[in-house]
Image (cartoon, rainbow, N blue to C red; front, side):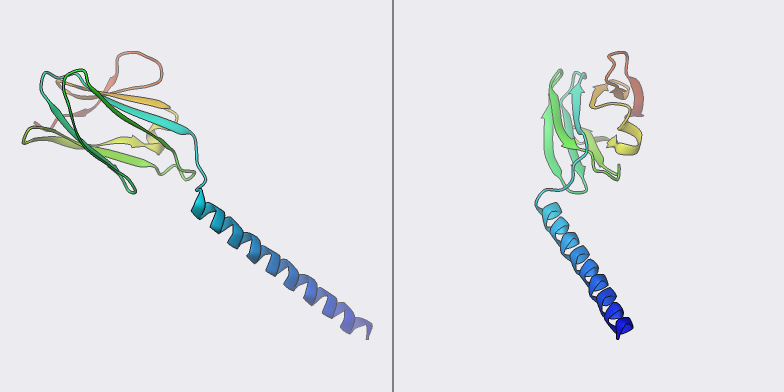
Length: 146
């Protein structure tokens, strides 16, 4: 009799733990759908330093930021939260009229997370120069295709 009540208590206890776990995981999933977990805030800015109008179309897997035309000295930028898996990726296509200048990875978390929180890109004559949070001459990351 004692063994049977002990087994019954253990079964009820185990089932309670499983039930509580399922309820908590479901509640966490509902909360995550409402407001996803967010990493640190990052800002990306692209500046056109060329004498021509520069077309820019930027996207991520989830967001299409649209097509923008920048005159010399104009900026286009956006901000976002890096995901916790560090897989955030934004890429942009660049054009000069009908001439395709290239499509490049503008923000890739596994490259840029520690490089910059305010990631600045300057479109110059030879291509795209990437700047870190410490102002200095930017490195040429991408050369124009044409």
